[in-house]
Length: 327
Image 1 (cartoon, rainbow, N blue to C red):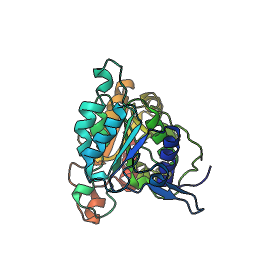
Image 2 (cartoon, rainbow, N blue to C red; image 1 turned 90 degrees about the vertical axis):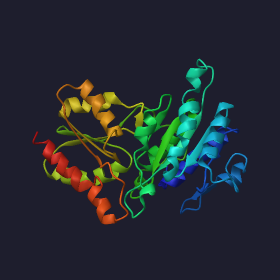
Image 3 (tube, helix red, strand yellow; image 1 turned 45 degrees about the vertical axis):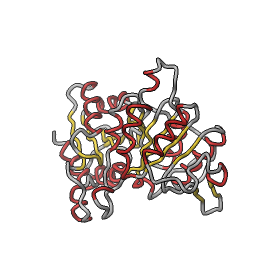
């Protein structure tokens, strides 16, 4: 076990699973297929597994081709991972919705689809243009039948959830938000391991307020926690990790204890995944007080000042927590 970047942990997961499954493939667009550590360890997927099992060199910049090739390989029985950059997640919808997500049901359970759609999540912390700042694809893909959806928040979970997704016989959407890759990371085991689906992580225990956040929102929540504690609020911070299936039992048990639920996310406000989290909890826990913080229904501006004004940051999270204690 050692300190590893999230990128290295993910490449390590791919390498370990490709060694264990000689017909597994990994297709991608412009992404690096290698990573290294300061201590000298290097993972190079093209060098180790060749251009037949990876995109190699010369593949077209065609997201539908990359997804379609992966789904085709999975339909033929090979484990497959197709990786798309953040601004192209919408291109995978038709193949995933009408093919990957439905094949088990449409064949009466005779066919499986060991396919992972690796979607890079955009961020809103820089001056990127609107088409590079879409966050919240989890709500879009979670609504499609037959799919599972995960969103890791650190290097340990990134490796474990990727391995779990690869080993699952059904399609999994793996959301990879770059914002969670900076800062201190937990130790990552050298061996292969799984982080289970449908099991949330309680990052901090508390008794006054249940705070739920995943992926990029966890960065701002972590910044906000000291100020919330300083305000005299005992907060229980839960990271779902697995969005579909969602660990409703853990969320409801916490809300039943605290009687207050604050959900923070970076997706757009209307029809966001946070709305689903709240709906599940209020059905399980009568009388719980709820609030959601999300990005407004607006295209993220290129101006960093305007973007910060709209972004659900630590200051807004602290303010919302204090207001909830007055309810």
